[in-house]
Image (cartoon, rainbow, N blue to C red; front, top):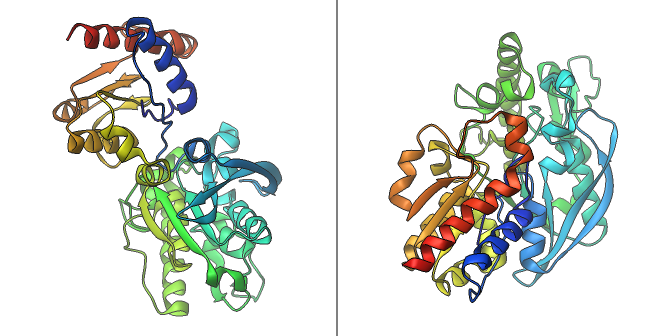
Length: 372
């Protein structure tokens, strides 16, 4: 079992436990290997820590609106080294900002820089950073500012690192960057491949869900473009078109300038958990997520699982909260695609009955497997 979380309803670990109970009801002799998945968004820390026998470390960091928040990061052994696992969702995730306060002009990625510095102080030099689910669109200047990079407006005033600061940016000074960064390796876990700019970039694709109005989108895009120009002039390299640069409101762009390597989030969990070998030992593979649709094919965890299962010659089942537009494109990759909701229902009812609906759907799938 290798499901992602059912966003806003059940964590991946909870999904695994419900699936386990449902399968054993119909297949009591089954040997179950549970691997909670994530693709770089909410739950990435928990998934990697759980699959790697790591631990969670708490810390105080700057939240999405600039006020302190209590957050956490994971500590694991990865390829023989100590590695810190961080995620944007736990530092400045969208659910951390009340609906009426969502405004990407007034959010910052500064908390990620705080968390990196805290891990550096404990001797970590290797990092896995999940970028999904952020409330920010600051191009990563908050992160960089917390690490010592200085951003100035035309009047020579230093900018803090909010989204609105991009429109004032005139000059970048890298000389204050924490010198320890030079000895670090950053693996950037992201499930999107958007560039920094344009109609498929950070602002236009993800800005609306973070509270941006149409007028705000134009302002942010113009400011992000100017920021990319200043960054290119300062560093001599152009990374704006790199796939994934637009992740987390341009946070991918900033991490690329720190030497980061962008990889699909699900692949990171695969590497840290030994997922490939565990799938090869299985007879069946079960995965799922909150909603599966055509976008699942763009690197989401359940599709990554399906491809691994296909390569190993193992049948895979997809059991998700719902099947959305374009879900038929998934059929060639699974032995079956199932929705846990099988009747007309309002959102409140669906959320209330999420556990029971998932249990019933997986129990029915297990019953079918038992008859084959």
